[in-house]
Length: 309
Ligand code: G3H
Ligand code: 13P
Ligand code: ZN
Image 1: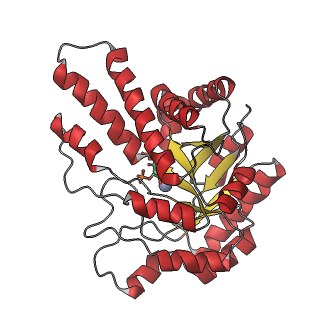
Image 2: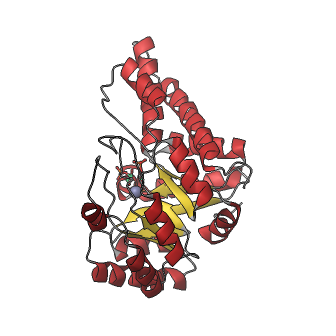
């Protein structure tokens, strides 16, 4: 099946109350693990490349691997640019066959974010490509964070409405307490579901995106640590919160990278710890690919998108 856009996928996800996993890819085994998981669960998939991934693996290698995936499996696959920093990067990906790009103007002022996003939207739409934008800053929530501190970083619902109206973006990444990486919360994990509901009220037709949505499952951390890692005090977004956001709100896209990294690293560490003499890359990358497949299956269940291909 050729690459698809998120447009119809998000429409169905909003209507039926689930979200689609957007998984970061960096090499062949990660792509294969994700595809194998998606195929087994009959779920749509969003494969996304960060700038770092494009530099590491080289754009052409990754996009041809994704192309191969579309030829081999019969589930909808979106090719998405994650955290595009400027117009040029987005243009390159739009011209290079991506079906969706993110322009991340969240570090800019409100007005500059609008200007940049509008520029990308105009170009992308002229080529039939959809655009995810971001408003607010991803910051972990500390216990007892004040309302004013929250307002300074989290997405403002009124601004969200103005932003979507003025930019014409197709989906919006919102800041409600998630953050990137394995150390998301100092105290109890908490997301601002009230704010999410407010945002949704203001822009009821706009699909929402959650970045920094890995759950950092303790069992995956434990495998890493058992075989020599030192990952301490990590904390992710509990799976029940992800399910709540996916099923009860317009959150249609949930970004996951850290959990894939943990699954991959744990599997590789285990092979080396148990077989110190091993040096055939297939013997450790193979188990890593299988561990990634299993984490994808788990995510698809949490997001409720099993059999939604
Ligand atoms: O949002 C960040 C993603 O986890 C990608 O991370 O820039 O290290 O590839 P990266
Ligand atoms: P995690 O670090 O929580 O996996 O988030 C990934 C992400 O948001 C990629 O854009
Ligand atoms: Zn992100």
